[in-house]
Amino acid sequence: MRKVSVVILNYKVKDQAVKCVKSVQKSTYGNVDIIVVDNNSGDGLEKELEKLPDILFIQSGKNLGYTGGNNIGIKKALERDADYVFILNPDTTIEEDAIGNLVATAELEKAGIVGPKILFADDKKDTIWYAGGILDLANVLGKHRGVDEKDKKQYDTIEETEFVTGGAIFVRRDVFEKIGFFDDRYFMYLEDVDFCYRAKKAGFKVLYVPTAEVFHKNAQSAGLGSPRQDYYLTRNRMLFASKFLSLRTRFALLREAIRNLAIPARRLALVDFLLGDLGKGNI
Image 1 (cartoon, rainbow, N blue to C red):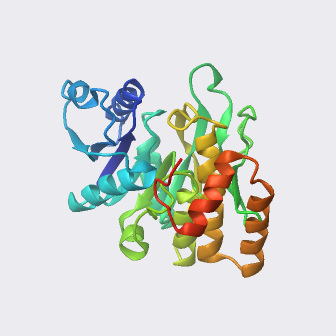
Image 2: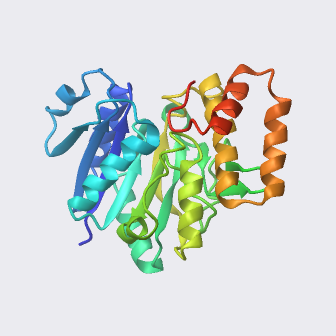
């Protein structure tokens, strides 16, 4: 039976992280390892996890963002001989059969990356958050197929997708061994698009798997529509373009950023990008 290491990164959402861990512990799949990384939250998560069995807790010591914190967990998972790494946002919970269905599909389809159907949590469990990723390369904008639609099984076919959201991304070991980890320069936002783009360029299949279901509370760490989110999306779109896309696209994004100089977060994003001050940046 393939070994699956689940990596959960916490940043000041202790109660959600504990709930996520407990949902993973209810998995019907028989070979699951749970690794929780904390980005120096100071919220007492380690003490809470001591009440639960068989959890490896890692304290990063500072806020390394989505990329840095998860990279710590991924590296530890590979050291512990994981065949697959399932990276989950702390504000998610999973169905009991989700991991088993992801493993079965990845094995059958020989896929490098697979992603579950993700539904909103709590009172919106019939509403889609992610049913496949759509990437607009010309503008470096990723969006979730089906978002805010009622789930009427309209996206219940296993199929290739342009990216799997980092909120719940299931990765075969040899993907990391071939292309590396999340690019720490992103810190947060678009690192999942970058990772899947690199994987596809390296020949790996990226699939959406609706038979596995995850529930997600949206934007618990950075805040949906916040200046922080605006900063990272603005900066990281230019970073992605600089890595993969044409000069024409890079200049188009630069012009867009210049047009938005009146918005403080976007102005700072442009300055940091031009100065090469990436990673956490100055927001």
